[in-house]
Image 1 (cartoon, rainbow, N blue to C red):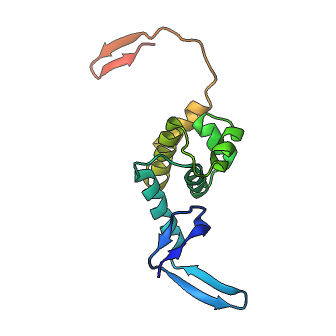
Image 2: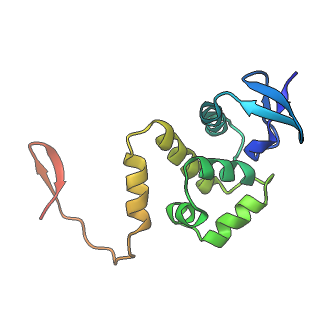
Image 3: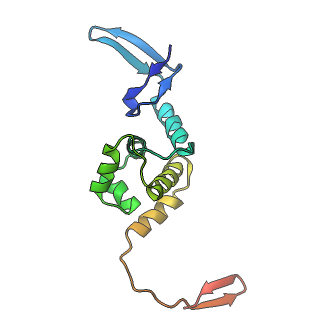
Length: 147
């Protein structure tokens, strides 16, 4: 018997094993043997899927990365209100750039070296600056920005 794991916040997760059903005075309860591993597997399935991420899946990944709506909105270059709207529209696909960046951030979170997150955080914190000319110089090690 499979268990419909709605506690994940997703409607389409079913467990074939790795859980125990327990009878309590309040009814049937479920015990998951490795919740952390289960959630990591769900996250990997979500970012590897070819279907666009939905608002519910965005929320699941955000919570797994232990980010507030405000923090993730800043990383994604949007507002907290916009992110809240994406999450509320549980079954609707999030916009492509948000989807792609979120997948990269989650992949980095579960198995990266932190470089993607550091780059995104740096970019999110940049103040708009006027464009300047790029002066490049060829050196023994290749092209570099001239001082």
